[in-house]
Amino acid sequence: MSNVLITGGAGFIGYHFSKKLSDNNFSTIILDNLDDYYDIHYKLNRLSFLGIDTSKIEYGSEIISKTYPKLKFIKGDVNDQELIEDIFSKNEIEYVVHMAARSGARGSFSNPHEYLKDNIEGTANILRICSKHNIKHFVFTSSSSVYGSKNDENIESAKLKPISLYGASKLSAEIISETYSKSQDLPVTVCRLFSVYGPLGRPDGFIFKCIESIKNEISIELFNSGEMWRDFIYIKDVTEILFRILLSKPENNFKVYDIGTGVATKITDIIQILEKILGKKAKIRNVSGDKSENTITKAHKELMFKGLDIQKMTDIERNLRDFLKQENL
Image 1 (cartoon, rainbow, N blue to C red):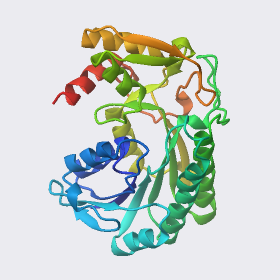
Image 2: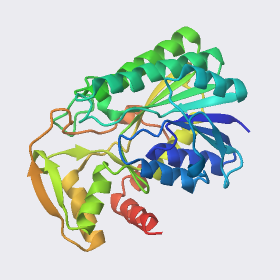
Image 3: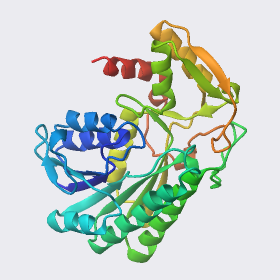
Image 4: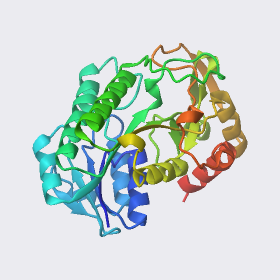
C-alpha cells in the first residue's frame, strides 16, 4: 500500500486526515514539530488517539502506533533538510500532504520571521526533496486567507490579494509549489481551506471558542459587531475531499481547489444555532475590528471539487450536533 508523508499531522486537520488514511490501510508517516502556537497538549492528545505513545517522543525518532501498525510519528521540522532527506531515504514515500505551517492571520504581523520561515522556506525545502525523489503527488493545504477582503456576499471573483502576512506567506508558498510543478514536472494540487470545524479542533477556532464560552458562561468577543461571514465546512467533509484529491492526478500536473461549501454564514447565526443546541444563551462582547481579518470568506464554486453533496455539507445544525456528540464521547 502507498506510503504517505503528512507534515503537520498532529494538527487538527492533519490528525483527522491521518486517521482517514490509516483507516483505509495506507502506510502513513506523520511529521510534526509540535510547536507551541497553541497549547501543545491538544496535539499530544490527538497523537495519543492515533495510538502514539507520546511519552516516548524524541526529536527525529520514529514511534510506531499501537493502534495502526502502518502509522508512525516523527517529531521534526520541515526546515530540517537532513531529517527530511533521511525520512525519504528510509521510506518509499509516494505521496506528500504538506499541512505544516505557522497559522493564524492575527498574529502574523507580530512574528513575521516565523511565518516566512515555516510557511515559505519550509514549503520550498519539502518541495525540493519531493522533486528529487519523484513522488506521485504533492498536496499543499493553503488557506482562504490568500483572497482579498470582500464586502459583498454575492461577489464570486477570486482575487488573490491577502490582507495578512499569514495569507501572503501561504500565497507565496502556492506560487513556489506551482513553479516546482511546471519546471520540475512535479504533480501538485493546492487546497485552499476555509473555516474548518469539528471534534479535536484548534482552541482558537471560532466555533470551538463559541462552544466553550457558552458552556462556561464566558463572553464571546465579536469583531465588527458580528457583521462577518465565513464559509464553515465540517472536518468530515474536508477529510473526504482531501482523500479524493490525493488519489486523483491533477489536471495538467497542477490544480487549485477551494475546500469549502460555497456558502457564507453570518457568525451570529452560528451563535444562535449553538444557543439552541446547548440550551443556553451566549454572552456577547463587541470588540474593535482587526484589519487582518476578512469580512466575508466563501469558496468559489468554480474552484470547488466536483461531485459533492452541497446540501448535506451546508447543514450546519446537523454537523454541529454531530460535533458536540463526538466531543462528549
